[in-house]
Image 1 (cartoon, protein in one colour):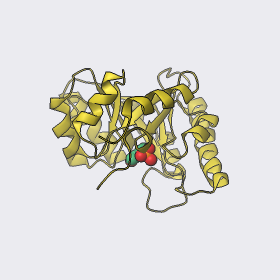
Image 2 (image 1 turned 45 degrees about the vertical axis):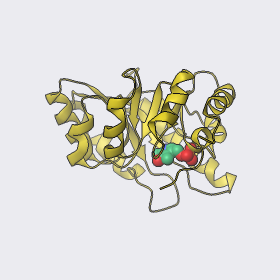
Image 3 (image 1 turned 90 degrees about the vertical axis):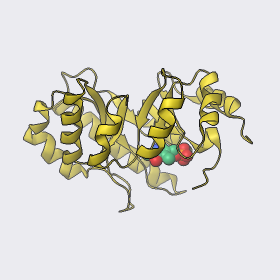
Image 4 (image 1 turned 30 degrees about the horizontal axis):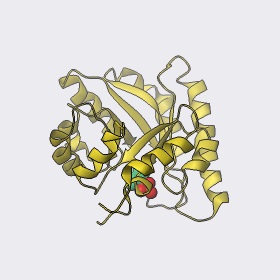
Length: 224
Ligand SMILES: *Cc1c(COP(=O)(O)O)cnc(C)c1O
């Protein structure tokens, strides 16, 4: 291992604003890297691929909280529902319905974040603000008894231009505040703003981030 995972974790933690949670993004890194972070007290980890998560989950300590952060196909939901702690990357109504159905069968209530698309790249996933407005306004989500809506997740445009990154996080924060007031004011659990990665988490915290998702700065570059 070339990376000082323990040192990196501590350095990042000391730079987080009060109350901001660190999700260590361990995708493409082996279980031994995860254990380095675990030994330093880290319990919250994020993975983006089902198969990889299903391989890691059984061989790692059971008190790890796993967050799913990648594009999730509906047909794979049933495999992670028994143990997943939060699904951060809910990007369609179809997926939400499937999570609810599978959670019901597993007798669980699953925490989710709705992923919104604010970046300039078309390739990024997530609900557009228009789509999500329409869905929330329909009220259909209120009958999803096995879903716990915990907030929003987003990714900023991948760019060196800080103005664009600020614009993206500002859009996300304003939208969070709007829907919190309009739909979720009586849901105390709807409070998470998951934005910020290795390159932009310090900016994200200026725009209200409550969770930052950091991979490269902890574990080093990924080899795909
Ligand atoms: C990979 C990934 C991250 C972590 O990115 P780093 O730049 O390595 O910190 C965060 N969020 C999502 C959704 C990701 O897919």
